[in-house]
Image (tube, rainbow, N blue to C red; front, side, top):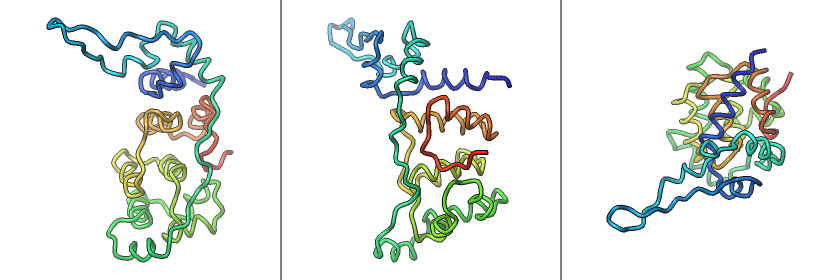
Length: 207
């Protein structure tokens, strides 16, 4: 199999990942000068993106070190239990995850049952998520977006209605962003990208 998609992932990660505390802790990381003197004598600060791996002369070695030591500590829970008051308010809200999910699935010609078969979530809990009796955690929303091959606008809608956002200092989020932007939805290629960065806490059913 052509592995250029993995090379593309590495380039994307180096250009976007921004947990500078973890990056600076890597042996061999060269801290750039972010402060400089302007012509008028004032001290100025360069853009923080200068701290990312793609500006490092030995970025390949640093990335390999990062991957070797990385452990996925993101939440592994697939859902949370809303309060009675929250569920009551949802009845009057125009947009909730359950309502937006229903619209999105119809738009893509998907059925909730078919999507659930591609997720490693117990069917009874998935049904409750789809009905709004349970709230999905972020990992579940990301998994749904991948298996449904969502376009960026619909992906953002699902995230936003849950109060989630993609963060560049989060390894999982950066990898999923790459998959979504490059439309890498083939299960084998998708799983290889996730495995490359040891992303283990997404409720995706593996073959």
